[in-house]
View (cartoon, rainbow, N blue to C red):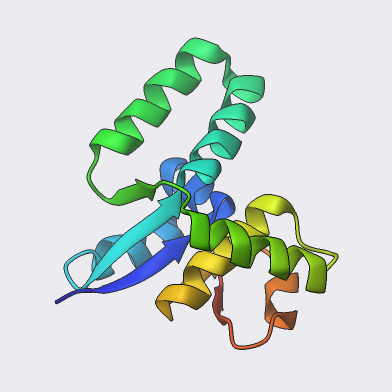
Length: 132
């Protein structure tokens, strides 16, 4: 069975923009790992691309990303919603999307690949910081 890694929006942005180091990390691990992200990250990334490249281009990029079978976007569950709320309460610096990602990673006991620096302050979170 493959291990799983959670990718945040920043890492997905680097991946879809062909950032060499990020492509190498993900492509060399795709046979050993499943990559997941939240549907909320999908929304966050779509919004960013829409503002930067326009709606049609954002739709094309995001649909290609979804169809690429590298990253699976997962829905939000009740249990994750509750834990994310608790995390947001405890760690005031987290955004709602960050709290949801962290809740998924903690619940699954998996690494989260992120471009964020403040995730290291969350107890028991396995974090791999991706530099760009």
